[in-house]
Image 1: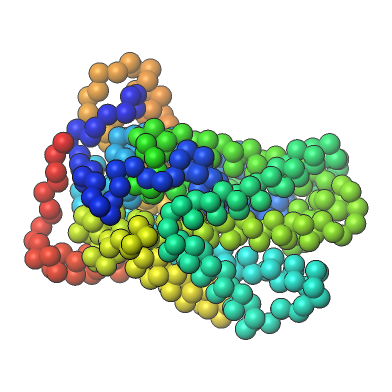
Image 2 (image 1 turned 90 degrees about the vertical axis):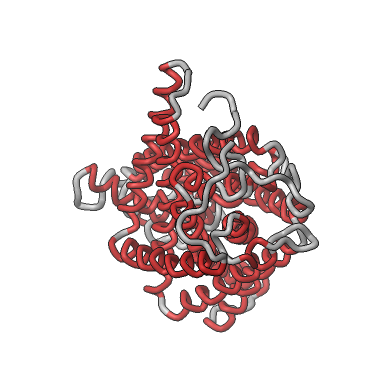
Length: 465
């Protein structure tokens, strides 16, 4: 969008108060770590095995998904420079389309954050169980034990977040390094051990190439959820107009390099028929490279660090979006209150309680857990779609005096991001679309209740810059 400038006819960011600092505590490095920590969760540790079931045509699907994710990161950067306000997609939708669109984005992302945390926790528990069994000989395989481990994994990040942004930032940087470095090691070193025969069949789906890419893309697109992280936490970012865009793009590019390198390396070092059945593909890849079984323990430790880091970052985001909406009167006021530590404590606690309940639901039924993962993916689509649409809206309506080439570039990127959101919705499946739509509709009575509590009738007037 060219040089960052104040909104023209959009929502004006609220003046700083004692509880809302003018600049956040997270610098560029911590912001990049937040993006990487939220995007790289536990999914990457199982991704090569999941994609192997489609054949190595899935690598093309990963490439297309990566292009969409990068376009989405650029859009968040452009919008973050224009509206450097907390809430990210919520603020962008409200700025462009009004308060109800903003509310629906906040509601949808809130659903995504606490539902998705349950999926991360369940996957994280599996690595904790593996590590305990291999290192200490402890059998933690029972459902009751798994639930206890999962709840501990959810509430540790909650406590870290309640202690304040500085503690959260340090924790996020450490866990990001612990998971990023070993995965990158596999991705780079593994390239020297690749054997072409290990890739196996190009397309194992029985469908044509386009159908196979769509199927594989439906799996691969889940791994990029979190590209909006710094946009949502804008008030905690130093110099948000500059750093939101940089952190979003750099973080996604780093994740893309990690995903593509590591997936190619694992597919090329583990025979396809073995990889399809693997529960620990990175451990199997290291075992094929160097021999022995100690690598499974090492990669389990990396997965544990990855999962707890992702939970830490998403616990913050589960409170940031409703906090921004509450400040604008779009969410219950409790979500907008800031504790003495400078954090939205109510949002953290409510979100973690809901995630804990969803965790119990995940362990009650295996099918329910799969539905949870797809449901979280669908609810992600709403903020992505509206953010891309907001960027297109401003490009079309503002009449900026810019070079035609720059306008064409920005419009192309925004259009790619919009199509990416459509693809994400398609890949989520019919059940997730239906369930997600019903959960979005539940938000309408909440919106009515919040408005009635404020004795407001009709849309609120937007503050004009």
